[in-house]
Every structure is written in C-alpha cells, then in structure tokens.
Length: 449
Image (cartoon, rainbow, N blue to C red; front, side):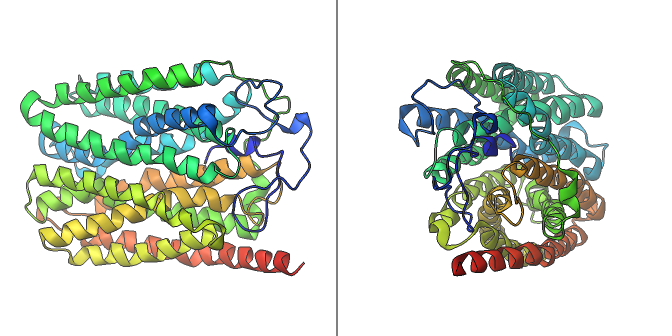
C-alpha cells in the first residue's frame, strides 16, 4: 500500500501484533515526520477523527470509487469487447487492457508517494482525477484496440493509481486508534463503484450504445471528482523535511520479507482471473445471457464490501497475516471448485463467496507488511509497502492474460485457467507460511519479555 501511510506514523511505536499503533514511544524528531497537509500549531498528533478526519474519509471513499471501483468493473468491458466492439481479438489480448489498468492502480504509488511527500498533493490529485475523467471520455470514442488500450489501460490506469495511493496516507494522518476502521470505511468505495458501474453499463449500453454508456460513467467520475478535490485541496501540501528511500533493495534478500513479496506475486497472479472472466464464464459456459452475467460482477463487488471490513473487527486478537493466509487457503478451495460450477444458482453462491474473499485479499497485505518482521525499521516501512505492492503488480499484469491464453472460450472450456489460478494460489499459501511462522515467533518472544 501507499508509502505515505507510514510517514505519519513515525511519532508512534508499533507492537508485536499488527494492531493499532500506540503512543508509548516518544515522538520522533521533526525530521522524521512527513505531514501531507499543513497543520496548525495545535495539531501535533492525529486528531483521531472529528469532522476534519471523517470528511477526509469521505474524500477517500470517492477516490476508491474512481480507482479500484473502475478497475474491478473491467469484467463487463471485457465481455463487451469480446462479443461486440473487438470480436476479432482473442480474450487473452483483450485482458491486457484490464491488466495494464489494474497494474497502474497498484504500482503508481512508487511515483505519487514521493511527490506527495514533497508537497505536491494538489497537482497529484488534480492531474490524477483529470486523467480518469479524460480517459473515460476518450474511451467512449474508441473503436480500435490500441485506442482502448491507451484510454482505459494507460490514461485511466495511471490517473486512478495517482489518486489511489495518497488517499491512504491522508486518512492515516487523521487517525490513530480508529485508523483501521477509517481505512476500512473509505475502501468500501471500491465495492460501491464495483456495483454501480457494471449496473450502469448493463442498463445503458443496450439502450444508448457503448459510447454513451461510457460517457455516463465518465460523468459520474467527474461528479465525484469535484467534491473530492474541494475537500483535499483546501490546504497546500507540505514538503517533507527529510527524504525517504522509495525502494530498499536489501529487503528482497531478507528471507522473511523476500518470501512475503514472492507470495504476494503468486496471490495476485490468481486474484484478477475470476474478476475478469466471471461474466464471460457465465455467458458462454452457463448460457445465462449478458445481462445476468453483468449482474454477477456487481454481486461479487457487493460481497467484497463485507470482506473489506468484517475480518478486521476481530481487532488485535487475530493478526492480519493470519487472516491473509487463512483466506488464501480458502481461495485455493474456491478456485478449484469453480471447475465444477455448472448451474446458475451454484454460480451465484460461488460469486458471493469469491467476492467476500477478494475483499480480504486486497486489504490484508498492507496491514501484514507493517509487522516488525517484515518492516524492521520505521525508516523502511514506506519503502517496504511500495516494494510489496510493486511486486504484486507484476502478478496483476500477467495473471489474466495467461488465463485468457489457457481458456478456450470458443468451446466454453475454462478448466485449465481455473486450475492454473488454484495452483498459483496454493504456491502463495506455501510461501506465506514462512512470514507467518516468523511473525508468530516474534510475537511469542515479545509476549515473554
């Protein structure tokens, strides 16, 4: 997750669990703080809520609608491209559009993190929202593959990534013990966007055509962008008094962290395969028709709302890395069981289950990275977050196209793609046991002191 989240935490200490940050450590020097928005003299620590805090959460909610919400909608676009707009192209090539878009959403923090730390919050947010809106409007005029790739893959993807990463940091700067709840509330914007946009496309495309359906979505993006920019750009950003490394290359050679990032690569290699091919599977394999197939994606995103919030209500009793590996293991079962789903009711149940799981898998890695066994120093936490998500982005980029090459859509044969997803998720679970054991030993040692 975003590098800036941690920059506001250097005035506090971390315990052996991944629970809320406590105030037991004396405040760090001014050189260690990296404020993202100008503070008054009285704001020496995060206010932990209040009107200012929760209005930033609202802005974060809007940002996730326009970033992750759009990204998780690509399944409906993929089915339309396959059947209507670009039928001459194989699904594996069409999937590259969504993979590029999703990759930029996760990897842009390596650029926008340092820019925001250096006080460029306003231009980052303005340019990011502008690219999302312009990209969607440009997509509405696209009729060729390269045009779709440039508009949706690159322009929307880069813009969504630019606004996505700073949002976590801005929210974190406003909360202490309520930070997990605040971030969870904001991240549900991705679920809401993932519900609204597929339903809009499904209702409007048959009546108005592809172009006007996409323009309607772009108008929603624009309407959401305006209050977001008003909220976040009221005050100028503040330049960090001490620059931080973007990447800590030594971390990749540490057994625990190195294994962790490789595990995330395999997890996200499988993660987007169901989200991209859910609608195509229902329409081609189960003969449901495109309307019902599009609705399935909205159902999946609705279920992810609960996956982003409910598991973390356990507080510090269950560490995020324990939550992560448990639901990865459940993911193996779900992905392999997908091969035997041959009815509409079964598809609905499976979609709900995967939607919930997807909400967990996209939120737990960032919380897990904060553990001292993965981020041993406060000076490298931001770099470690950026490194872990950039590694995951590689899996995001290539996972869906590989599945598209393995699936035989013309003959409604998805088994090889489904088994591939299950196998790579199993590899992720095996690798994740190493950081899990390391975290358990660390926590046990700290508890005995």
